[in-house]
Length: 107
Length: 166
Image (cartoon, rainbow over all chains, first blue to last red; front, top):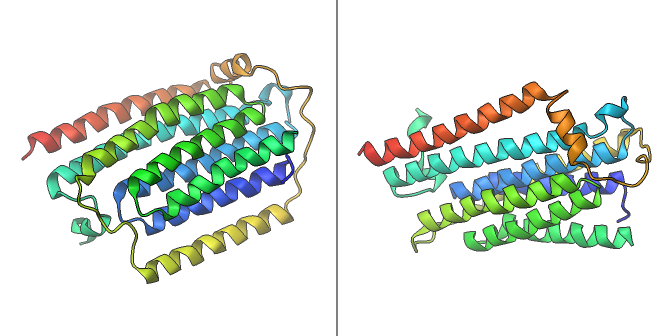
C-alpha cells in the first residue's frame, strides 16, 4: 500500500473491525478489554492521519488531531483501570470472569 | 522508501491484531497486543507525530498492557475458559464485522477529502501540542485530569469493597 490517507483509513478500518469481532466473540472479560483497546487505537490512528494529511482551517489548529489522540490515550488509561478493577472484583466474588455467567443484572 | 516502512508497520500492526481476535490462548493474545501497539506507535512516528508515538509506547505498552497481563495472570489460575462464544454467535459476529468493514470502505470511497501536503518536513511537535493543550483545549485537558483522578479513586474503591465486603 502507498503511504497516503486512504491507506491509513483502510488500516484503521481493519483494526476497528478486528476489535469489534474480538469484543463480540470473547467470553473472557479481559479478552473483551483487549478488543476495546484495538478499537480505541483505530480511532487514534484516524485522528493523527487526518491531522497529517488534511488541510487545516486555521494554522494554529494544525495539530488538533494529535491532541485528540492524546485525549483518547488518557481516556483509555482511565477505562482500563476501572474495567480491570471491576473484573477483579467480580472474580473475587464469583470465581470466574466468563461474561456469560454474569447474568444477575439481566432481570 | 517511506512506502516500504509504512507497509512493514502495517503488517506489524494487523497480523498480531488478527491473532488477538482469533487466538485461543489469552496470554498469546496479550503478547501479540504488544506488537500491535508497537506497530501503531511506528505509524504515529511515520505520520510526524513523534510525541504521540512516544506517549503510545509509554502509556499503552508500559501501563495498559502491563495491567492487562496482570489481570490475565490474576484470574486464569490454570483452568482454561472456553475463550470464544459458540459457532452461531461467532458467525453472526463475523457477518456484523464484515458489514461494518464494507460500510466503512463505502464511506471512504464516496467521501472527498481536502487533502493538502503538510507544510514542510515534520518538526518536533511537543511544543505546539503543549500550547494547544494549555490554550485552546484547556477545559478538555482539565476534564481529562479529573477523569483520571476519578478513575483512580473509583478503581481503588471498587477493589477495596470487594475485598472487605465478604
